[in-house]
Image (cartoon, rainbow, N blue to C red; front, side, top):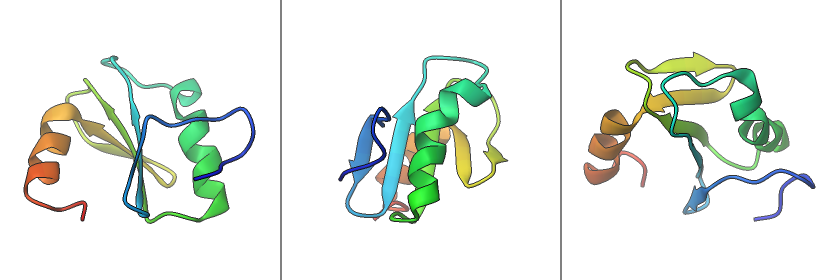
Length: 80
């Protein structure tokens, strides 16, 4: 999937979910630039930043998701 020049995400699930992985306990605005750029194009349903934070939170259209919660949802087919 083509997105704005200079931006990248780690994974695209199907044609609906963009995923950026961050090995951080605190995700800041600079970590979300690629997901936000992709969200502006409105081509996908979900924009996820999977990380080591303790709690799920929302920043605009980007969901910041603890790795354990992401894995549980991935295996129960929540992202199909």
